[in-house]
Image: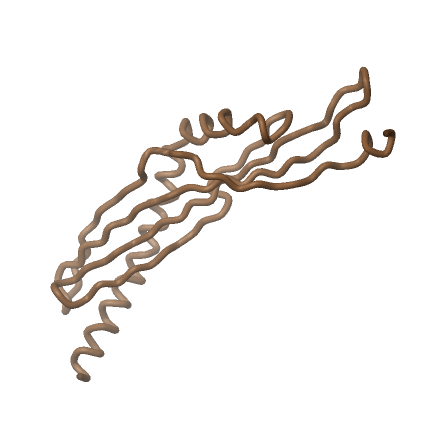
Length: 150
């Protein structure tokens, strides 16, 4: 019994939280391919890790639920009638936090925290969109080069 009380508990779980849709649409002008319509859709996944110990009778518990949110953004880009390109980007640790107690009973609270920090998730998504702009232009250049070469 004493060994259990001082043993460190560590296990993890991953679950999704229904955050309102993170979407963005953008048109990028390419000198050769013309306008490229890029649609972005973001999704979140929350990973939890249980740490700490339950205290024996009368002693304080050190249980904590550490959580982090990963953000996955999927992009579809269409230029004219011929070029369509897709890409998925992931940013781990877009949000992080910790709550006292068991992870199994903290899911709703974590979901509320993530929803309240939706603006931070949108900011992270827009940073990923900005980085993706250069990738779209390179993909369009490559498609134009392949089309010219036949």
